[in-house]
Image (cartoon, rainbow, N blue to C red; front, side, top):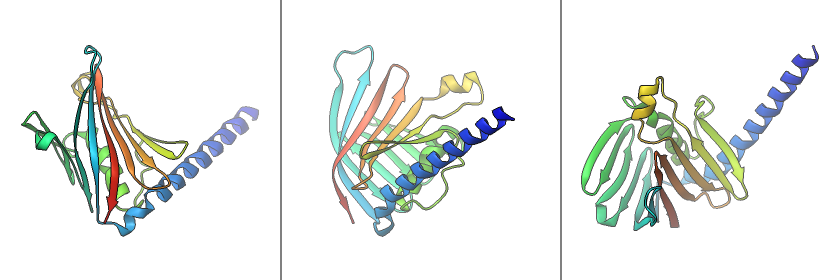
Length: 194
């Protein structure tokens, strides 16, 4: 009986913590309810563990309701585009396409960006691969895609996605995509909400 009470107490504490974190996230993205477009300057840092020096390039971020996100770097030579469930990555001018419907690694990623762009409308609690934490003035959303087999896990391009949102200004401060042997991180400044 004592173990059951302890387990129930822990579950209630976790649920309370989860609800508080989601309330912080909803508050942080509420500004997007009155916004149709957000633009910002973007800096891309490509880090490879085997290479001593990171590659840093500049570009722009554009986010539009209901589900369009575009990061264009180095005059469009590198791009990351989400248009609804369709994803396009352009690397050195070569285009790679996928969809969150055929590539489940991107399903939560799409849902999180739609949640942000719609000002916190929707339910992210059903995504078991999403963790929401608070760090100072930032809300950190960590998406760790799960694969249904070891083979599928090896084929995954990214091991996790980490988004940082300033809870006071609603600005998307960073998007980090972790991969085997390194990461790609986009940082954003000079946000304009329209």
